Image: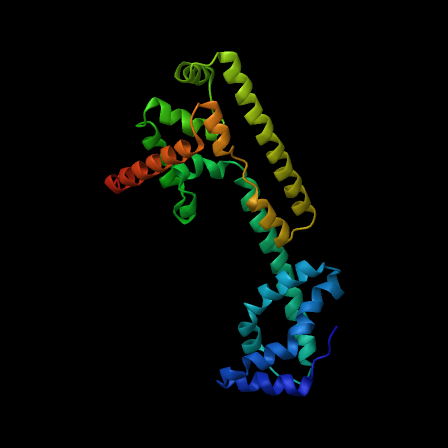
Length: 255
């Protein structure tokens, strides 16, 4: 690993502890290579993981600097001990993130990302889901079919309704729906494979890749099944989303 100038780093840390915040960049410059190479040398980590850990540690650097006491031993010894503890916490943090994603594999989409308000995920919680489910019951029959198609909850009665609305034989509706499920199944299989890789070796790169996989069917699938244009699917979802926001506002004190 990269060597650290012991005298210089101790001087910089003492200045920082005495209130000279301007030396923080010099401290970072002095230890950067050591921190980055640490998981590679000690834990045989990949460079992507080393980069993720570097960012993780640097966000917590100040506490480590303030806790250092010069009792005659090398700062490198202290830093190594700190890095070991932080790396263990870093791995636990990654596993926790993975567990949250794994446990919410598809449940996070109930009810269709809270009726397609995907950009406002910070407001997602059990109370909001209850309101979304209550709102769902107020929708007209066809709007319910749109939502249920997205979340793959079409019942035999729903299939009959689609046949009625689209004037397509039930057999054709079933065939088209099975095609949708087959495509979604492939995406879900890909998602499960990435999750398995994450369980073997967590990494931010894989986590980001996992988050990008949309296991919902596309607008074009819904449009084809329900005899709509893709733009009409989008317009219908916007109308439902706007109605839901209005419903939430009127029911702030309920549920």
